[in-house]
Figure (cartoon, rainbow, N blue to C red):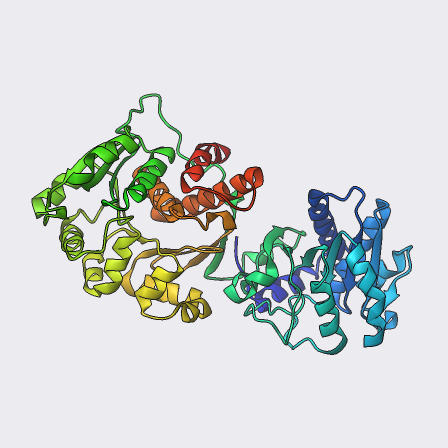
Length: 511
């Protein structure tokens, strides 16, 4: 699924309107919002709609007609003059049976104070994606009052006051939605970090714009649509055995961080890999065996509980029979860890996909020359925001301001694949094409969650999936696992290993 700019979306809309009546599209938009409200639950509930003067307001008016037809209590507060409405919004305005309450001056805003606190749902239909100026006056005051409401807040297409291009607040305030329903595709501004607190949970629904016109629009930004992943899983042969369905080498864990390696190895198995070799310092051998008896434990030589340097021949031996490699979770940040990693990166077989995570990223950030060993390799880096900021030697605030641009720049500079973890995690390939992940949950803010993703990715890569497809699958499965756990258990309290229990069923849903 493409992610479009305001200009691109306007072009698609304009060309579609040449063949589809505007009232038909407006009604479909209203149907999409109505269905979202139905999913939330409309029995014995009431809806308040703030309708603006343009087509976004028209969507709100069309929604009101739908709600009325189902006898669902609904109030419309109109921030326009009826005579100024365009034909399509006016069509739905004239269909309304209940009186519309017009707000023309600031002093009239007192009319909405009580209803704002009495309604179950508050729908923002004031301004759409075309807004490019600060919200002021009566609209600014209305949004401030709306944000104080305890009702569940739904934004149609974009929260009013947010730029659909940059994600920035246009003025002093903007609508703070719990959920935003975007039509057809996401708009780039909805996915920017500055917009996250306003957009809330993003939903995408089609309204029947012409697909033939969308195909003509070129973009480098995409959305990880779960529907596009259906049918992408490999089917196992009846002749399958543990070594034929994916062999993974995981180099992770140290005396104080064995859990990281365990979570990665467990996730690799849960992804469908049949054979996982887990390399750990010799002193951690018994711990690793007790944590995951299914893994083949490979002890790494130590001296005084510090890793001994590894030889090129030992690197070749470690990698000889595996299909993918993961290096880094809980690996350690010592000088001996660095020396070991440098030798490994120099001599491991570059035709095998390598995932670098955790402490491997820390060592990479402190020793940029290690990037020179990754040329012509199949490498996937999986930093979280702080690790990415460290790779660029900038502050977290600076990174968030240029999250997409800096991610593309890093991937193209070193010709690597990159996943930047966080809300709407990013995946970028060496050509600079960028994909936003659709599924995620705040429950993923838990220690070890990233180790699970790293193991999941290395497990998928061992099964012969391309780096592109493995990243898309991994991000979807990881995010969906968080969503499913949250739905069953609540918004907090997840342990990273809980995610691994969800992986097989999610894989099954993609067959």
